[in-house]
Length: 97
Image (cartoon, rainbow, N blue to C red; front, side, top):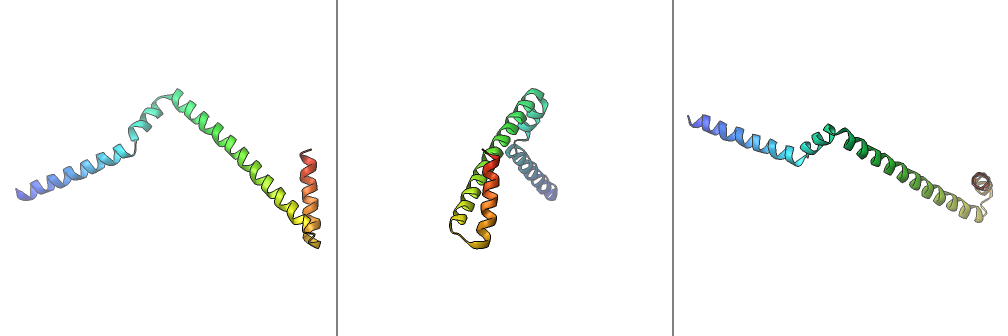
């Protein structure tokens, strides 16, 4: 009888622990979102637009930093590297003018 009560208490603790983990993981909110197609579509649309804009801005900034760095290296007049980098900078500048 005493062993059975102990097992019941252990089982109840595990159920409470599982219940708390499910509440913490917001599974109810996810199920609600998946049930509402309009909300799911709008959420994914906004997320996609945000990612696209973020990638565009990030690539632009990195490219600008790279071109500026290459221009600084060209001004150092390093013989072999300077020629190749000046060609690259000229190609990039022609494409964006």
